[in-house]
Length: 159
Ligand code: ADP
Image (cartoon, rainbow, N blue to C red; front, side, top):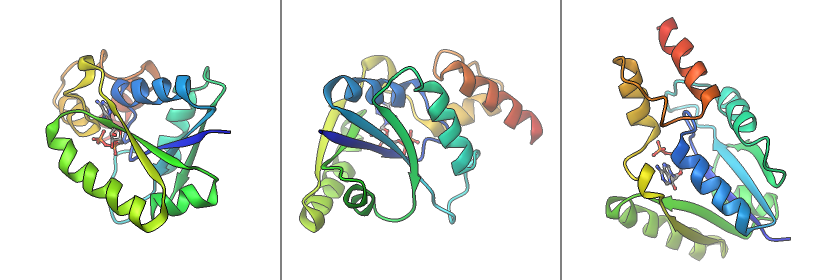
């Protein structure tokens, strides 16, 4: 069984994330989407909400599972029999940090990191940008899945 993980904050999941997750699901037996719980980081959605949204938008993919974790991604990998981390690369600006992280993870644990180039349609897309745009009334309907748009709109209306 070739099982890989797509880790991230997913606050909230965007079409860019979903593109990487579904392409990984075409290549591997199982993809675990792992939501990082970081109590010291402020997020718009709780980890449980982020997991719920991911489950909703990936429900048609039988080999995608959603979980959450706290701590090191490589420890999550070891605990779940995962041999590789799949990351999306948007631009060269992502590369330096991601390469450093991949080398650190491999040297500490032997867990590989595989990079997928972003779909050019989503190369500019990040959760932070989506939140900023939506907050000031921007139309993000083409950038996030429907259930995320609904959740985002109602969460921003609360604040
Ligand atoms: P962000 O706030 O930048 O979206 P995340 O931690 O939620 O950060 O992202 C998790 C991972 O998803 C990133 O490390 C990256 O590998 C991938 N990713 C995020 N956005 C995109 C995108 N638009 N295209 C491809 N991959 C992406």
